[in-house]
Length: 303
Image (cartoon, rainbow, N blue to C red; front, side, top):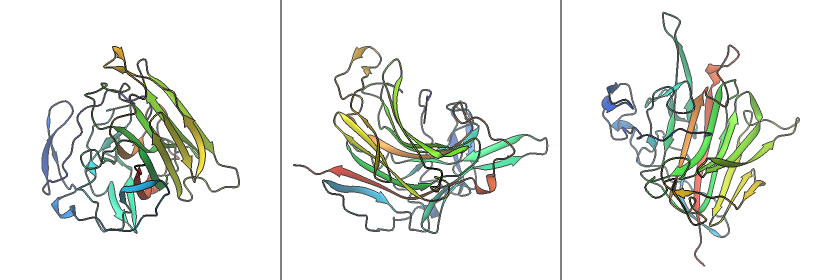
Protein backbone atom coordinates (compact mmCIF):
# COMPACT_ATOMS: atom_id res chain seq x y z
CA UNK A 1 0.00 0.00 0.00
CA UNK A 2 1.20 3.54 -0.68
CA UNK A 3 2.59 6.07 1.78
CA UNK A 4 2.23 4.08 4.98
CA UNK A 5 2.62 5.62 8.37
CA UNK A 6 4.90 3.96 10.91
CA UNK A 7 3.81 0.40 11.43
CA UNK A 8 2.43 -0.51 14.82
CA UNK A 9 2.04 -3.84 16.51
CA UNK A 10 -0.18 -6.31 14.65
CA UNK A 11 -3.16 -7.64 16.52
CA UNK A 12 -3.37 -11.38 16.21
CA UNK A 13 -5.88 -13.66 17.83
CA UNK A 14 -5.05 -16.74 15.74
CA UNK A 15 -5.44 -19.15 18.65
CA UNK A 16 -8.44 -17.47 20.19
CA UNK A 17 -11.62 -18.72 21.75
CA UNK A 18 -15.03 -17.77 20.46
CA UNK A 19 -14.36 -14.36 22.00
CA UNK A 20 -10.99 -12.90 22.98
CA UNK A 21 -9.65 -9.79 24.62
CA UNK A 22 -6.95 -7.78 22.87
CA UNK A 23 -5.37 -4.35 23.08
CA UNK A 24 -6.27 -1.64 20.62
CA UNK A 25 -3.61 0.68 19.20
CA UNK A 26 -4.32 3.24 21.91
CA UNK A 27 -3.95 0.63 24.66
CA UNK A 28 -7.64 0.13 25.46
CA UNK A 29 -9.01 -3.36 26.00
CA UNK A 30 -11.16 -4.51 23.14
CA UNK A 31 -13.49 -7.49 23.30
CA UNK A 32 -13.64 -9.15 19.87
CA UNK A 33 -16.76 -11.25 19.48
CA UNK A 34 -18.02 -13.59 16.78
CA UNK A 35 -14.43 -13.97 15.62
CA UNK A 36 -12.43 -16.62 13.88
CA UNK A 37 -12.29 -19.21 16.68
CA UNK A 38 -10.27 -22.29 17.56
CA UNK A 39 -12.73 -24.29 15.48
CA UNK A 40 -11.40 -22.47 12.42
CA UNK A 41 -7.84 -23.71 12.95
CA UNK A 42 -7.31 -26.48 10.47
CA UNK A 43 -4.55 -28.22 8.60
CA UNK A 44 -4.26 -26.78 5.08
CA UNK A 45 -5.46 -28.86 2.16
CA UNK A 46 -2.37 -29.92 0.23
CA UNK A 47 -2.80 -29.22 -3.48
CA UNK A 48 0.01 -29.46 -5.98
CA UNK A 49 1.39 -26.20 -7.34
CA UNK A 50 3.17 -26.11 -10.70
CA UNK A 51 6.93 -26.29 -10.85
CA UNK A 52 8.83 -23.25 -12.14
CA UNK A 53 12.22 -23.73 -13.75
CA UNK A 54 15.02 -22.44 -11.55
CA UNK A 55 12.82 -22.28 -8.45
CA UNK A 56 11.77 -24.55 -5.61
CA UNK A 57 8.30 -24.34 -4.09
CA UNK A 58 8.66 -22.90 -0.59
CA UNK A 59 5.02 -22.55 0.45
CA UNK A 60 1.59 -22.16 -1.11
CA UNK A 61 -2.07 -21.86 -0.22
CA UNK A 62 -4.68 -22.83 -2.79
CA UNK A 63 -7.57 -22.03 -0.38
CA UNK A 64 -9.21 -25.36 -1.17
CA UNK A 65 -10.21 -26.20 2.39
CA UNK A 66 -13.32 -25.24 4.28
CA UNK A 67 -11.59 -22.91 6.74
CA UNK A 68 -8.69 -20.49 6.67
CA UNK A 69 -5.31 -21.95 7.61
CA UNK A 70 -4.74 -19.81 10.69
CA UNK A 71 -1.51 -21.63 11.47
CA UNK A 72 -0.02 -19.76 8.51
CA UNK A 73 -2.14 -16.62 8.17
CA UNK A 74 -2.30 -13.99 10.90
CA UNK A 75 -5.58 -12.06 10.73
CA UNK A 76 -5.09 -8.47 11.88
CA UNK A 77 -7.30 -5.99 13.75
CA UNK A 78 -6.81 -2.24 13.39
CA UNK A 79 -8.95 0.81 13.99
CA UNK A 80 -10.16 3.12 11.18
CA UNK A 81 -7.51 5.63 10.12
CA UNK A 82 -4.62 3.42 11.22
CA UNK A 83 -2.75 4.15 7.96
CA UNK A 84 -3.38 6.32 4.90
CA UNK A 85 -6.53 7.86 6.45
CA UNK A 86 -8.39 4.70 5.44
CA UNK A 87 -12.00 4.38 6.57
CA UNK A 88 -12.31 0.68 7.32
CA UNK A 89 -11.83 -1.10 10.60
CA UNK A 90 -9.88 -4.31 10.12
CA UNK A 91 -11.63 -6.99 12.15
CA UNK A 92 -11.19 -10.67 12.95
CA UNK A 93 -14.57 -11.93 11.79
CA UNK A 94 -15.75 -14.69 9.51
CA UNK A 95 -18.03 -12.22 7.72
CA UNK A 96 -14.94 -10.40 6.43
CA UNK A 97 -12.45 -13.22 5.78
CA UNK A 98 -13.58 -16.70 4.73
CA UNK A 99 -13.19 -19.42 2.11
CA UNK A 100 -15.79 -20.14 -0.56
CA UNK A 101 -15.63 -22.47 -3.58
CA UNK A 102 -11.85 -22.83 -3.39
CA UNK A 103 -11.21 -19.11 -3.08
CA UNK A 104 -10.23 -16.78 -0.28
CA UNK A 105 -12.81 -14.00 0.14
CA UNK A 106 -11.90 -10.70 1.78
CA UNK A 107 -15.12 -8.72 2.01
CA UNK A 108 -15.68 -5.06 2.81
CA UNK A 109 -18.94 -4.43 4.68
CA UNK A 110 -20.78 -1.14 5.11
CA UNK A 111 -23.22 -0.59 7.98
CA UNK A 112 -25.25 2.46 8.96
CA UNK A 113 -26.43 2.94 12.53
CA UNK A 114 -29.69 4.49 13.69
CA UNK A 115 -28.07 7.94 13.72
CA UNK A 116 -26.93 7.65 10.13
CA UNK A 117 -23.28 7.06 10.99
CA UNK A 118 -21.48 4.90 8.42
CA UNK A 119 -19.04 2.19 9.52
CA UNK A 120 -16.87 0.01 7.28
CA UNK A 121 -15.21 -3.28 8.19
CA UNK A 122 -12.81 -5.35 6.11
CA UNK A 123 -10.02 -7.91 6.31
CA UNK A 124 -6.24 -7.90 6.37
CA UNK A 125 -3.98 -10.95 6.83
CA UNK A 126 -0.28 -11.76 6.71
CA UNK A 127 2.20 -14.65 6.88
CA UNK A 128 4.78 -12.93 9.09
CA UNK A 129 4.84 -15.39 11.96
CA UNK A 130 4.87 -18.50 9.78
CA UNK A 131 6.23 -17.85 6.29
CA UNK A 132 8.96 -15.23 5.86
CA UNK A 133 11.67 -15.55 3.22
CA UNK A 134 14.45 -13.71 1.44
CA UNK A 135 14.50 -13.69 -2.38
CA UNK A 136 12.26 -15.75 -4.63
CA UNK A 137 9.10 -15.53 -6.71
CA UNK A 138 5.63 -14.79 -5.36
CA UNK A 139 2.57 -15.54 -7.50
CA UNK A 140 -0.96 -14.39 -6.59
CA UNK A 141 -4.07 -15.15 -8.63
CA UNK A 142 -6.84 -12.70 -7.81
CA UNK A 143 -10.02 -10.98 -8.91
CA UNK A 144 -10.77 -7.58 -7.41
CA UNK A 145 -13.97 -5.70 -6.57
CA UNK A 146 -15.18 -2.76 -8.61
CA UNK A 147 -16.34 0.40 -6.85
CA UNK A 148 -15.11 3.84 -5.88
CA UNK A 149 -13.08 3.80 -2.67
CA UNK A 150 -12.20 0.09 -2.76
CA UNK A 151 -8.47 -0.69 -2.65
CA UNK A 152 -7.35 -4.35 -2.80
CA UNK A 153 -3.67 -5.23 -2.55
CA UNK A 154 -1.19 -8.11 -2.47
CA UNK A 155 2.15 -6.98 -1.09
CA UNK A 156 5.18 -7.68 1.09
CA UNK A 157 6.75 -6.08 4.13
CA UNK A 158 9.95 -6.79 6.09
CA UNK A 159 9.45 -9.28 8.91
CA UNK A 160 11.56 -7.18 11.28
CA UNK A 161 12.30 -3.47 11.57
CA UNK A 162 15.35 -4.02 13.77
CA UNK A 163 17.92 -3.85 10.98
CA UNK A 164 16.98 -0.74 8.98
CA UNK A 165 14.17 0.83 10.96
CA UNK A 166 10.50 1.63 10.44
CA UNK A 167 8.83 2.27 7.08
CA UNK A 168 10.04 3.36 4.58
CA UNK A 169 13.59 2.48 5.66
CA UNK A 170 12.87 -1.25 5.76
CA UNK A 171 11.31 -1.26 2.29
CA UNK A 172 8.02 -2.44 0.83
CA UNK A 173 7.20 -4.54 -2.24
CA UNK A 174 3.70 -4.04 -3.69
CA UNK A 175 2.93 -6.90 -6.05
CA UNK A 176 -0.52 -5.60 -6.95
CA UNK A 177 -2.67 -2.60 -6.05
CA UNK A 178 -5.85 -1.73 -7.94
CA UNK A 179 -8.25 1.15 -7.38
CA UNK A 180 -11.91 0.19 -7.50
CA UNK A 181 -12.87 3.13 -9.72
CA UNK A 182 -10.33 2.04 -12.38
CA UNK A 183 -10.18 -1.75 -12.54
CA UNK A 184 -8.43 -1.67 -15.91
CA UNK A 185 -5.15 -0.57 -14.29
CA UNK A 186 -2.83 -2.35 -11.87
CA UNK A 187 0.20 -0.95 -10.05
CA UNK A 188 3.38 -2.68 -8.85
CA UNK A 189 5.67 -0.61 -6.64
CA UNK A 190 8.68 -0.64 -4.34
CA UNK A 191 9.08 1.88 -1.49
CA UNK A 192 12.36 2.58 0.26
CA UNK A 193 14.82 5.13 1.64
CA UNK A 194 14.70 8.26 3.72
CA UNK A 195 13.41 10.56 2.41
CA UNK A 196 10.84 8.15 1.04
CA UNK A 197 11.12 7.23 -2.62
CA UNK A 198 9.28 4.80 -4.83
CA UNK A 199 9.50 3.21 -8.25
CA UNK A 200 6.43 1.86 -9.97
CA UNK A 201 5.30 -0.18 -12.95
CA UNK A 202 1.74 -0.08 -14.30
CA UNK A 203 -0.32 -2.10 -16.72
CA UNK A 204 -3.54 -0.87 -18.30
CA UNK A 205 -5.68 -3.49 -20.00
CA UNK A 206 -7.01 -2.87 -23.47
CA UNK A 207 -10.57 -1.69 -23.89
CA UNK A 208 -11.73 -5.07 -25.25
CA UNK A 209 -10.04 -7.09 -22.46
CA UNK A 210 -11.95 -8.18 -19.33
CA UNK A 211 -10.86 -5.93 -16.51
CA UNK A 212 -9.37 -7.07 -13.22
CA UNK A 213 -12.82 -7.23 -11.60
CA UNK A 214 -14.27 -9.47 -14.32
CA UNK A 215 -11.76 -12.32 -14.37
CA UNK A 216 -8.84 -13.74 -12.41
CA UNK A 217 -5.38 -12.53 -13.30
CA UNK A 218 -1.98 -13.65 -12.08
CA UNK A 219 0.25 -11.05 -10.42
CA UNK A 220 3.84 -11.92 -9.56
CA UNK A 221 7.20 -10.60 -8.48
CA UNK A 222 10.68 -12.04 -8.95
CA UNK A 223 12.89 -10.77 -6.15
CA UNK A 224 16.63 -11.28 -6.50
CA UNK A 225 19.72 -9.63 -4.97
CA UNK A 226 19.93 -6.28 -6.75
CA UNK A 227 16.86 -6.65 -8.98
CA UNK A 228 13.07 -6.83 -8.61
CA UNK A 229 10.82 -7.69 -11.58
CA UNK A 230 7.02 -7.44 -11.69
CA UNK A 231 4.65 -9.37 -13.97
CA UNK A 232 0.96 -9.53 -14.80
CA UNK A 233 -0.15 -12.76 -16.49
CA UNK A 234 3.55 -13.44 -17.25
CA UNK A 235 3.91 -10.04 -18.98
CA UNK A 236 6.81 -8.08 -17.52
CA UNK A 237 5.71 -4.60 -16.45
CA UNK A 238 8.71 -3.33 -14.46
CA UNK A 239 12.37 -4.12 -13.83
CA UNK A 240 13.94 -2.22 -10.92
CA UNK A 241 17.60 -2.53 -10.01
CA UNK A 242 18.50 0.67 -8.21
CA UNK A 243 17.40 1.82 -4.76
CA UNK A 244 18.86 2.77 -1.38
CA UNK A 245 18.22 3.08 2.33
CA UNK A 246 19.88 4.11 5.58
CA UNK A 247 20.30 2.27 8.85
CA UNK A 248 17.62 3.81 11.07
CA UNK A 249 17.80 6.98 8.97
CA UNK A 250 21.43 7.80 9.67
CA UNK A 251 24.16 5.81 7.92
CA UNK A 252 23.70 4.72 4.28
CA UNK A 253 23.29 0.95 4.05
CA UNK A 254 25.06 -1.19 1.48
CA UNK A 255 23.06 -2.07 -1.63
CA UNK A 256 20.83 -4.12 -2.02
CA UNK A 257 19.54 -2.98 1.38
CA UNK A 258 16.76 -2.87 2.41
CA UNK A 259 15.64 -5.66 0.10
CA UNK A 260 18.10 -8.20 1.48
CA UNK A 261 16.22 -9.36 4.59
CA UNK A 262 13.20 -11.64 5.18
CA UNK A 263 9.83 -10.32 3.98
CA UNK A 264 6.32 -11.73 4.35
CA UNK A 265 3.10 -11.61 2.30
CA UNK A 266 0.07 -9.42 3.09
CA UNK A 267 -3.42 -9.50 1.56
CA UNK A 268 -5.98 -6.81 2.36
CA UNK A 269 -8.94 -4.84 1.09
CA UNK A 270 -8.92 -1.20 2.19
CA UNK A 271 -11.84 1.21 2.00
CA UNK A 272 -11.10 4.85 1.29
CA UNK A 273 -7.82 6.52 2.04
CA UNK A 274 -5.51 9.08 0.50
CA UNK A 275 -5.09 7.34 -2.83
CA UNK A 276 -8.51 5.91 -3.84
CA UNK A 277 -10.68 8.48 -2.09
CA UNK A 278 -13.91 7.67 -0.28
CA UNK A 279 -16.75 5.45 -1.48
CA UNK A 280 -19.86 7.11 -2.82
CA UNK A 281 -23.44 6.06 -3.48
CA UNK A 282 -22.35 4.13 -6.57
CA UNK A 283 -20.08 1.75 -4.59
CA UNK A 284 -21.74 -1.67 -4.45
CA UNK A 285 -20.89 -3.18 -1.06
CA UNK A 286 -23.02 -6.23 -1.76
CA UNK A 287 -20.27 -7.25 -4.18
CA UNK A 288 -17.25 -5.69 -2.46
CA UNK A 289 -15.29 -8.96 -2.44
CA UNK A 290 -11.60 -9.43 -3.12
CA UNK A 291 -11.15 -13.02 -4.32
CA UNK A 292 -7.81 -14.85 -4.20
CA UNK A 293 -7.45 -18.22 -5.92
CA UNK A 294 -3.95 -18.97 -4.67
CA UNK A 295 -0.73 -17.59 -3.22
CA UNK A 296 2.51 -19.39 -4.18
CA UNK A 297 6.00 -18.63 -2.94
CA UNK A 298 9.08 -20.07 -4.62
CA UNK A 299 12.74 -19.70 -3.68
CA UNK A 300 15.71 -19.82 -6.05
CA UNK A 301 17.38 -23.19 -6.45
CA UNK A 302 20.90 -23.34 -5.11
CA UNK A 303 23.49 -23.59 -7.87
